[in-house]
Image (cartoon, rainbow, N blue to C red):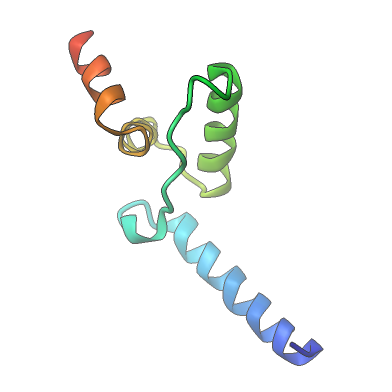
Length: 85
């Protein structure tokens, strides 16, 4: 990739990210965050990485953050959360 191609790629990437950060309804622009693996990571580290993820995506709505978190962590986590209600 030459300099001109790179600049064109970069411009389209920046435009796409700006669109993603202004649209909270377009879930296709939200990439999945990996599932928590209790055997390989402390939850505090995972939570910090998740907070970084949603911040990079420009997601500030707490309800949306909770939904993304539950979606990323699958059935087992969802059942645990559901059982605490």
